[in-house]
Structures are given as structure tokens and as C-alpha cells.
Length: 133
Length: 251
Image (tube, rainbow over all chains, first blue to last red; front, side, top):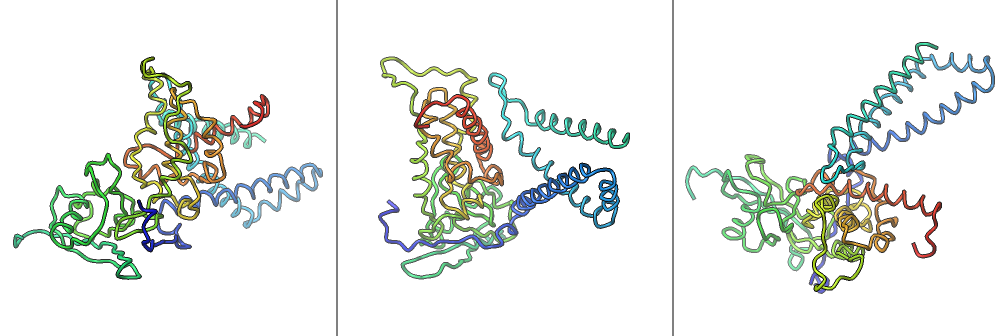
């Protein structure tokens, strides 16, 4: 049995840059990093709500500041991060949402398709509302 | 050896603790054959070039789980890694990552064995049933529920691929949790609650961050990442239900 040996076992620790060694690891770290961006955006939405609450003048001033190049850049970064977050999240759902119809499993494609479909519909509705306002 | 014989180079990890303090790589030139796998090359080395090389193997057909090693940095069953996939580049063979090395390509897998015991990865029937009462009956639908997770051959490629296990060795890991799920989902089994404390511990499912590499490297398509996330969903549901319908002490 291995536990009886007096062999000097070799331990190979993981390097600090382990997440750069494999593209999949890097993509995973980026995926998790997008949650920081999402959290920051949630704070932004709270600030927006607060400004709306403070009245039309306060909101107008805040709305103007959002049109600055810096703000637009941050929003673009947030959009890219949120999109990456969503796509990677959807990719994982078929592993989690396992539905059986008797012996047969609902195919991954159906689950994935339903998610993308719902995303498209909700996005369309939001865009229409945004354009109408 | 023929004059025109094609050859391929293997760079093999050597660790001989009774002779050398440090590991090193040793280069071997082996014949290249279209139908050879890395295991064939290792066997050729052992038989014809260097008998001191140590490694594990058995069935050579992907069902025993013995021959898992790192091939060019990827966890692979060496009986399933064809030379032609790498030829003519040299092939680097190392022991399975995230495990202590005993010698050359042989790792210590006590940790995995211990974790399977902790998770009670065996059938614990709902009610004791005497042999005279006959066999347990199971419908195809009941079998389908857990069949995928039963395909695990304990090769531990998933542990080598999991960065969480590499950083936190206390993590129960993909295969052990997938096997626990295999029994939890088996209609004959009645020990889900018994396993739950270990499964849902901080070293269990909640240590997993769903990197998903375990599922990618699994040679039997077990999808251990899926097993873990499904266990998270189930555990969360039960946790919420326990507030609405408390089951009393000891859960």
C-alpha cells in the first residue's frame, strides 16, 4: 500500500500564473472577472435610481454626464463583459438543467435555443421601449 | 530496426527518489507506428530501451482508468492518445497533475480513495433486502437518471484538469462528487441525506467554481461538472424547503 512506503513523494505546486497556461483557464478567469463589471453596473443602476428620485434637474445633469466619451467607453466595456458573461452562462446551462422525458433527455440544443430565444425576445422588447421613450 | 523506420521522440518525466533528489526529463526515441498510442511507446521503452521506467497501465482499451498521465500538458489516458496526433513533434509525458509523485509516472492516489470513502460511493439500499426476496427492479427511465455518472472509470483525469483541486487539495473533486450523485440518483439507494453533509460541505460542491475542464477531459463523457452543479441546485432547493418544512434535528 502506498501509505506504507517511506518514499519521498514529490509535490508539484501550481504556479501563480496557472490560469495563463491553458486558454480554457484564461477564459474561465475572464468569465468570473465579468462578475465584477456586472456588480459595478448594479451600483451604477442604483445611482441612476437615486438621481431619478432626486428630481428632473438632478436626473438631467446625470443624464448629460453619461454622454461623455469616458462614460460611453465604460458602458461599452460593460456591454462586452455582460455579453461574454451571458454567452458563457448559457453554454453552461445544459449541464445544469437536465430534464428527462422518460428515458430520453431533453437535448442540449433545445435548452440552449430556448435561452437564446428568450434573450432575443426580451432584448427586442427593451430596445423597442427604449426607442419609444 | 529498419533503416527507413520512422521514429518519434518521447520526453519522459523521471523521478527516482532513492537515487536523485530532483526530477528530470529523459529523452527516448521510439519507432513510430500509425496505430500506436503513447502507452505502446512507453511499453516499447520499458521492454527494449529502459526497464527502470515505472508507470501504471492495465486494460489498454480505456475501461480500467489506470494509465492516466499528462501528455503535452493535457490529462490523457495514454492508451487513448495516438502517436499520430503528435508526430513528428516530440511528446512530453508527465505524471498526472495535482497528485504527489511516488516514482517516475506513478502518482499517489490515496487522496481520491479516501474521498470516495467519505462520500460513501457505494449502494446503500433504501431498505435491507434479503437475497431470497429477489433482485431490485429498475425501469429504463430510472436507469437513465444516473447512467451517465456510472460510466466513471476513476481515472482521475478530471482531478488533473481541475484548478480548484490543484489549489485546494481538500476539495472533494469532480469524480468523487459525480459518483456520489450516481448513487444519490439511483432509485435503489436511500443514503442521499447521509451523503448530503459531506457533499454540501465547503470542501464539497460549494468549492467548485464550474471551470468545466473536468467535463472536457473526461474520456467516458461522465460530465462531472454537470453532476456537481445539479447537486448544487438540489442542495439549494432542499435548504430552502428545510425552512418551509423543517424536518427536525440532524439534517
